[in-house]
Amino acid sequence: MRFQPPWGGAFRLQSFVHRTPEALSPATVESIRKAILGSSLLGDSNLSGQFSGTYGFSITFRREALSEVTAMFPAFAPYLDTALLPDCDTFLLNPLLVREGRGVGAHIDRSLEFYGAGIGCPVAVSVLYVQVPETLSGGELRLYHRGNRVAALKPVPRTLVVFRGDLTHEVAAIDAGAPALSGARISLVVEQYRVPHSLRAGVPRFEVRTRAGMA
Amino acid sequence: MRELTMDVWLAQGPEEVFAAFGDPFRLRRWYGAPPGGHRTGATGDVASGEPFQVSLIDASGAPVMQRGQILSVTPGEGLELEMAWEGGGLGADATRAAIALRPAEGGTRVEVRQGPFSTAEALEAHRAWWGACLGRLVRVAAGDAVPCFEEFWEESRGFVGPLGAAAYTVLAGLREAGAPAETVAQVEELLYTHLARLPPDTAEALGAVLRSRVTEAG
Image (cartoon, rainbow over all chains, first blue to last red; front, side):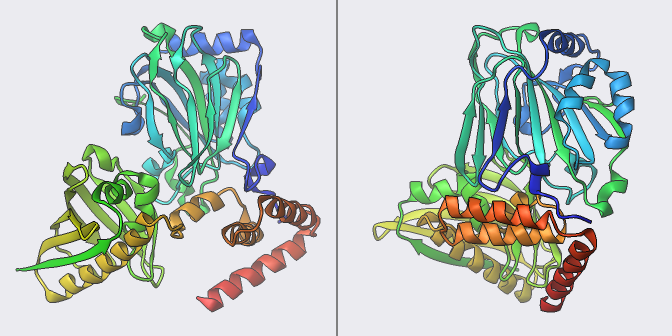
């Protein structure tokens, strides 16, 4: 086993976030947008209480099930091709729709703890901004490292943001510009994990979850 | 049935002390870890009054879990919660605790009342636990950077294998010792550049040495 640089080489101890403008083509992002808004899975968020009032669904999958994920959600394939880090083995993919008057409270992602205590936080989290209304006010992504704010990122369409999984983060409340679900701030988030070997058996190979349960 | 009472005085005013309860970054630096142990994580939205779980390890490294729920909060004045334990020698009692923040001598007296305890041993174990927590609270409220296993543990998740853990420990240690950011960055580049050149069998042997030394020390 060779020494591997941390975070798959994506970050250093004192660096926290990368932003790639125009990460995917307009046509690709538009097809992602249509796939999310047209999905029958879309509903109240099934994530933690900090996501109250937001919408989405979540897809847990191990790397070996990637082809099944892209078969079910072909529009997401180019995003996953771009975003997945090579040394992560398990992922939680989550379209996130936030409307006016809502935000996401400060939290560290630990979504896979649902499957077993001890899995902890992801190695990294990737966010693609799929739809950002032109008149949007608020909705910036704020990142904190050990209590200190290290970034405040205004959402920009087609931009890919990758941040370290140990960062606490929040989405500031949207003040205006996204009154309807079809005009919401839409991002496609993928939490990227390296699950300890002893806990892997508890994580499903591929599972879609909504507020109502497994889809 | 027995009840625990204890208190500690802090130089800061009640509002300032209360901020160490409401700010999750500060809260985890003082709340939870038993004497000689560490807090490893927590789940549940404490602020909303949902049930929460605090994951801990005791001084021997054995897992301990606190389950609880905030029952009431009066900002700047205190809160009430209930708690029960799995492991850790704190007994099986489900108890209620009231924490009151009272202005005193230019600062704040933090008073804890908790019970009922069915045994004196459980009460004394909680006294020791609160002693450890309140000792850290004094430091956190004063602005000290109280070391937090949970923070380091989360940050170290990006590092792979024993050599990655060793590199993290050196780098985080430099940072915590106050080394300038550029020095930390230089050491980091040096480590990654050279460690990546290690033949796999050498990396594996060194990793095994590290594991054995850590086991021996434990």
